[in-house]
Length: 149
Length: 310
Image 1: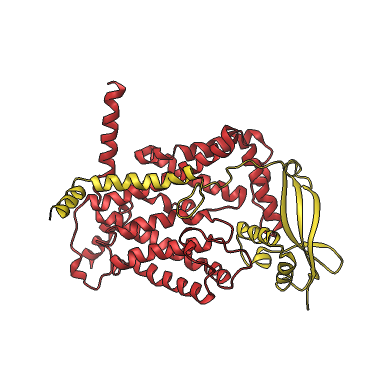
Image 2 (image 1 turned 30 degrees about the horizontal axis):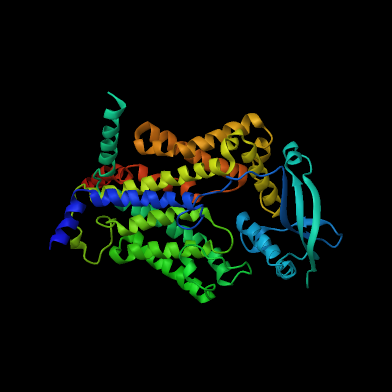
């Protein structure tokens, strides 16, 4: 069985492990060449790209009976405690034009003090945030829905 | 010595390091610690299984091996995956029928990580432990410290490259993930990333987003954003930590300094951005860089003393 002997020789002399190490390293680096963020191999692009001083993000607020704006929790918004997932959930709602549906879904999860749920796109000024002043510069309503009791 | 003389010597040194033998206990300790972490991680994240079992309204954009799916899994299949992860995870940690349960738990974890990231947001905190489990699952990680139905099959083992090489491979994988993250920053933003403005904007973005989403504002976000004298050194330190990660493979003081810096870095991202990578931040990802079996050996004499007393 010369093939088996050759394989055993490869393993015993370490060539198999050297080759496997090289292949793993190449595989790990390959997403950089392909610019592909995948799983389990990735370019790990978190926080790599530049961001402008103006931030635009989709948010959700609750409105009380007095019309006062109130923050909702992440579990109320997206049934998660992870801000990345919650943000992705809202971005997808806008991308798929399902903000009205998502608004009603969120309205079913909020507390009794909330009468309306509003999904909006907000613009914030980072410089103002760093000064500790109000960073909100613009708010555009995308959907509003009443909380059913 | 000329550079030409030094190069083969460096390659030989790396080769000796790569193929250096290790005790079976070290690999088994990694199996128990890393497998245990992933098992607990799955249990703690049961809410994510519940969310995906209810078919989220987000579009299904499969990544990894989830690409084999044409459509999302039915809810019951997600719960079956959860149950299999618990059963095979426990068997993995115990080393029970490891030739089957080792690869199976690794593949199930890959399946979950793929499915979890298939909803428009790649969750990078699950990549590294998936890769480590794939190495551990295919390695002889249950040669000792395992619960086997055939206990007599567990003979005392010598130190061997069989146990050493998978650990080296896991260490290489750990440092490569940091290097790749550093390269991504340089590719997307160039050296300008080091001036801190990009990092400052990311911190502010995270703080505003979490504030708007009703979460806790990162405690140190306001302190660092807008303070160039603070944020620029933080950006340089982040890049240095990532790009110089291979120094950890040298061992000794360099490894200790790098590992400590990595833990501080992850604590910093939690305090400034409320983003925490538990596998890395709690140090589990760094374990292949250390002789983890020493913890058990340190306890062994105590056990022996107690036995003698009795």
